[in-house]
Amino acid sequence: MGPLGAGICHCGMCRKWSGGMYMSVDCGESVKFAERATLGSYKGSEWGERIFCTTCGSSLLWQTQDGKNQHVSIQCFEDPSQFDLKIELFIDRKPSNYALAGTRKTMTEAEVYAMFAPKEN
Image 1 (tube, helix red, strand yellow):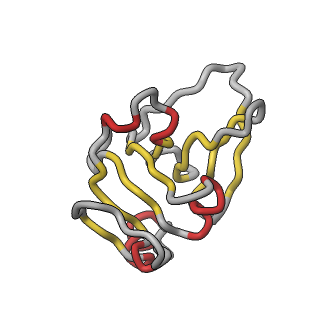
Image 2 (cartoon, helix red, strand yellow):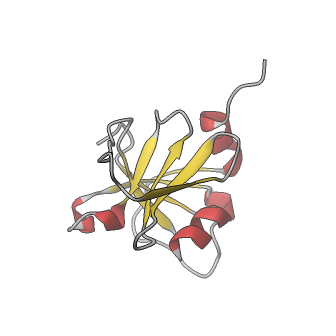
Image 3 (cartoon, helix red, strand yellow):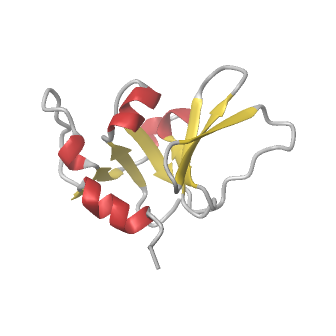
């Protein structure tokens, strides 16, 4: 598991893609797929992409296009409750009609873009 553990993204694209908040496990760059895996990719920005199964449609992971930051859907694991949720991303985009128990680190849209978006020269 990566440095941030498990987290939640509240951005509009993740909510549409996953059917709710996107919960994932930070796997660094360790995820490898079998050569014959039936995968699709959707590039949602200049720096991020979403990987899904073209056979069943499952949302599998979000990653930076260079593959160095991979975040696997927590729902891919037999027991999603094994992961402690450590961070909430795009907290300023979270709909006001739900709240999660407990406290964790939060990041705004601007903070997330500063962390992942390529730096302009």
